[in-house]
Length: 220
Image (cartoon, rainbow, N blue to C red; front, side):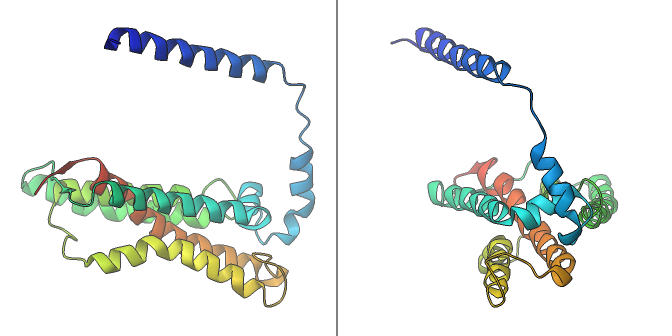
C-alpha cells in the first residue's frame, strides 16, 4: 500500500469519526447546569471562593491527583523510550539574549506566582502557573544551554515526583480524621494553597522536561 492511499484512508476515517462525534454532540438535549448549582451551594465549605478551584482541588481532588500522575507518567515514558538521547541547544552565545532572558525570567516567575495565588478567587491556579514556569525554564535552556545543567539527575527526579508524592501524602494525612483527600473545613484553604504551590514548581519542571528531553535531542 503506497503512502498516498494510506493517507486517504486515514483522512476518511478521521472525517468519519469527526462526523459521528459532531452528530452525537448536536443530538444532545439542552444542558441543565445542575452540577454548577451543587458546587455553588457547597462553595462555602471548600476553602476557596472560585468554583473551578473548589472542584479541582477539593470536591474532585482525586481526579486532579490522577491527572498529575498521568503527566508524570508521560515524562517517565519519554525517559524510558529514549534514555540515550540528550538535549541539543538551539542557540549560540549572545550577550543580548543572555541579558534579555535575565530580565524576562523574573517577570515570568512573578506572573506565575500571581496566577497561582489568584486561583483561590478567580481563574488561575497551579496548572496555569506551572505552564508559565515551564516556559521560562525552556527559554533559559534555549539561550543558556549550560545554565542549570549541573543539577544532579536524582534531584531533578525528586522535583518531578514531588507534586504527586505531596498530593498523596496530604491524602493519607486527611485519612487520620476522615476520608482520603477529604479536607477539614477549617484547614481547607491552607491545604489547597500548599498543594497548588508544590504542584506549580513540580509540574513546571515536568513540563519543561517534556521539551528538554523529548523534543530536541541528538545522539551523544
